[in-house]
Image (cartoon, rainbow, N blue to C red):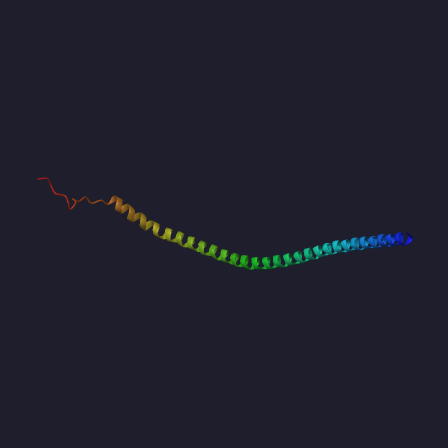
Length: 118
């Protein structure tokens, strides 16, 4: 009977060691998962920062050229307005004279298709 109780004791001890090893393995797995998650987060943050930096550089290049383009368009618009204004002032007097002469200088004539009643 002693050998049986000794065998049972050995089985219980072996079971306890197995449980301990299993718990230790679970703890290691949990630590490794946590570490992997932290590494992945750090890698994602690094990648995000890199892509944002590239985006800002491209945005600066594009917006810079758009700024130049905007200034160029503004200059062209101002020049066109200046030309139209000067043309208006140059031609206003002549146009007013032509318009008034067309309205005021009427020479009555009989229309060529008019047939007097017989």
